[in-house]
Image (cartoon, rainbow, N blue to C red; front, side, top):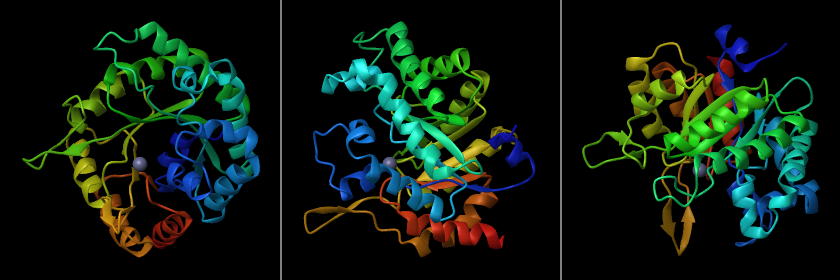
Length: 294
Ligand SMILES: [Zn+2]
């Protein structure tokens, strides 16, 4: 059976997709709309996003299910549709990817905090379990637990994958640069420390997404590689750090800029490279072209 880990073992560098959230808004999603409901109401638009990344050369694409945990969908009174909205999401990306590219089921954080007592570990586990079952039954190859900031919440999601599926598990955290130049999660954990904890929790691939452009990601990957040379690393970087231009948020890094930094990111030890906020199919195409030439 094909697996991402097996392909990486053949010394391959794989290319992932780019941003979904920013792309959905560009297609007309409004603030306050439920993005996952679009898997039903705007299926053609979601399919077009998925296909555009495949056409750009991505080896893997995600699903439109980042906010598809039951707890997140409660905000829209859609919690009873968790399983099917996630299954639709997986089905759309599977259709775009065909059998030769990978589909990663996207799972984002619930937004509720264990440490304040507003949610329990069991509630988190159950919320992720329904989502992951929908993604599994829709045909994903792996689950990508992404943009996390709390280790304990991530572990509930990882357990929900491992105890209910045979799918590979990818987990990515967002790290911010502090005044001293080092990177930490919102809860103050360093990337290298997080990689060790999650490797022990059984993730197949660890990584980082959002919050940084490629420059920051190069530092984060180097730090992880100082303590762990084995664990595959995925990077979904933003198109640079957002700046405000005429009252609008703009991501400054062009496709050419990201392509230019790609060899350095690979040399630092990244194995899978894609984008997050502000990246488009053009960014992915430029990254893919460089990876193919290396
Ligand atoms: Zn992002």
